[in-house]
Length: 64
Image 1 (tube, rainbow, N blue to C red):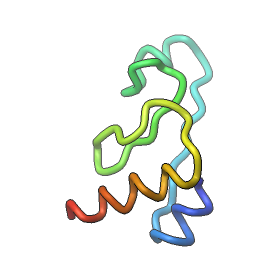
Image 2 (image 1 turned 90 degrees about the horizontal axis):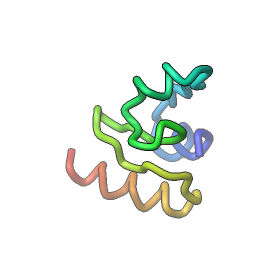
Image 3 (image 1 turned 30 degrees about the vertical axis):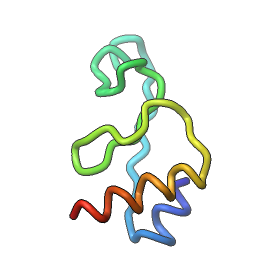
């Protein structure tokens, strides 16, 4: 997905690895394991396919 973000949307993703339970507890993600945040808003809380990512980003970019 990071390749799609860069190639198709010109977005440089920032991937943050949670290394401790404290990191997970302080994560904006409800489950503390995975989420995609765009413009300060969680747009996906679970792992998703590239197609789903594309659909989400197209929807988010229409809001701008």
